[in-house]
Amino acid sequence: MKALFGYGRIGHIIEIALDGIENEELRDPKICYQYIKGFIQDEQKFYLLLDEVQFMPRFEEMLNSLLRIGNIDIYVTGSNSKFLSSDVVTEFRGRGDEVRVYPLSFAEFFSCYEGDYDDAWGEYLLYGGLPQAVQFSSERQKMEYLKNMLTSVYLKDVIERNHIQNVDELDALLDVLASSIGALTNPTKIANNFTSEQGSNYSNKTISNHIDCLTEAFLISKANRYDIKGRKYIGANLKYYFTDIGIRNARLNFRQQEPTHLMENVVYNELLLRGYNVDVGIVNVYDKNQEGRQVHKQLEVDFVVNQGSQRYYIQVAYDMAAREKQEQEYKSFRSISDSFKKIVITNGTLKPWRNEEGFVIMGMKYFLLNTNSLEF
Image 1 (spheres, rainbow, N blue to C red):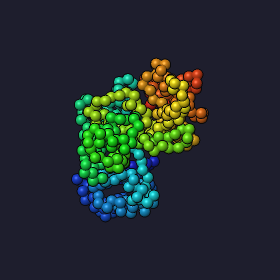
Image 2: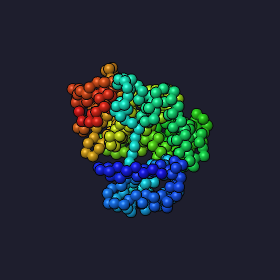
Image 3: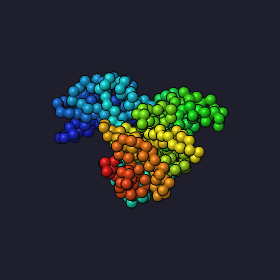
Image 4: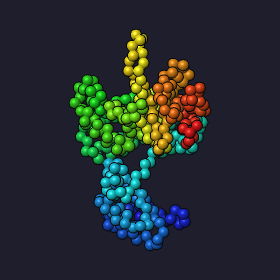
């Protein structure tokens, strides 16, 4: 059993790791409750760090009892197969808060990387930001770690928690999602592809449920489509991104390294980490075809980014050197009549600048390494 005490600004700290054999007796909720309560002998604030809580049966009752003590803050970690953030709302009746912990951002990764920006960016784009992967020195260690994390931790938790029997179908679904980051899709479209290509009866309902399971386990995130002119959500198609790009690459055995899609995934994760709400934007326009007839088109804006009264429209482009590419990225912006800032993020180290139309163009380096980069 281990109790660590710190005096002064951070108060008293009690740390218990329930997966350790030395703490086996503390897995009994009544014994653990009395053990913790015994340390709280003054009115100062105490901080309880309880790790691997799934080793304790009826841990919810023990934690609810501790919450009645006025001068204790409780921080709990546990396996996704036993304890998710959604359970906090259910089990603790409004007395618990979720603290979302993301993989390392690129700025955090770069702060401990021994090398220049270009090397760090290449490494991050391949192996992602899980802290343990960053600590390994060899490529083989990083690859094996990420593959093991995916199969032995993420997928194992998802399968155990949700009692999934058709594991092969879940594996195939994960391959599809990993191969199509940044592409619009939906469970019905995926189910149709399974039927036509593999003769599978993997239903859209089951696929939707499995996607929800992967989302709850923080393996992937969903980005909804938003009609910018119509000011409404469109539920037909969504985009899916991986919470850690290294895990995505490990799933595909480090193949399919499309730089634009990987960049888009990194930008999406960075925006979430900064506290923004992020959607995929569409703009409905009418244009003339080669015969001069008016036709309806949907133009895409990679991300519609909101935080309170702030909004940004963001396009992600690997290379903006060609005039045709510039026109492609700018056309969506030109069709948006409001005055919110419109930003193009490109690969490289370009410092931000405004073109004659008022659109901001900035390099990925500036965007990732400057917390307030969208304020330029």
